[in-house]
Length: 312
Image 1 (cartoon, one colour):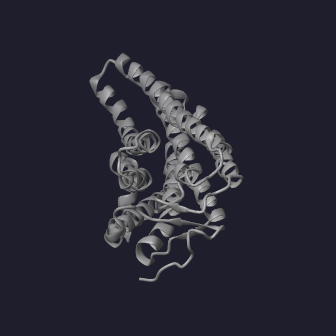
Image 2 (tube, rainbow, N blue to C red):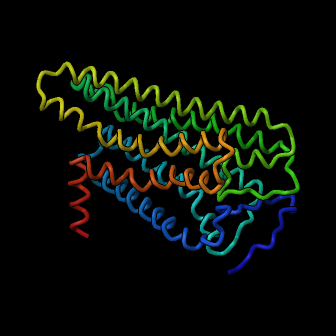
Image 3 (tube, one colour):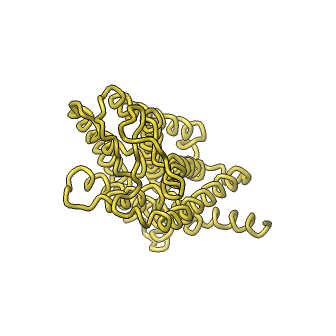
């Protein structure tokens, strides 16, 4: 295989090692890795296409689902092309500016993804608890504003991460034991005082995960309370069925993210490749499964996708 000649002493370059401890298996690992990426692209672009073509799907839930699909495309796309260069060609070098840019887009898309899940929980709350006012509360304009607010939050939260790191001096040994430029992995390359960087990164992780999960939990507490007040069991079942897809996406999205964040910061006994595999599960598994979950659990979307599949 071709090799990349830039050495770790190059002052403008980091060296991404891929998955430390599993270098010999990089090519084999790339097979499921690339398959998950292709599945995520096909699933999310299909979802975007079907919603765009079908006027009947131009509803708040599906517009939010399109926003989710865009983040599910952005997150793996910011990582996978470079990772495959490492796996296939041993092309491990990445410039400092390229590294910080990758970090920004990856983490900003992650924060945006979380904001969309919160908005989708609010959407389900309105649909079940106040169905008569659903179309007047969640208009297309309001959905667009909520999306822009989520994007603004993501940019404002994440932009300081690369800006703070760009002012840090980096050590001569610039080998990052990771397959992409994760914030904490790059912070550890600094020879300066990283207290501010570590603290800010931890605060952002706490605010995004804990605050967003709290808002989602609050929405579902109100939903459950409203469902329990309904007299018909059939109505109970129908109301809860509208939430199953969203709950599945939450579990797929937050579980690996939470474990990855906690193990990366607080556990020194876990092997490095376990950290990296957990991190990859967050953006690859979620991006691959989200359109499948909604395609199966949402009958209207399932029927429209089936219609276009039959045509093809």
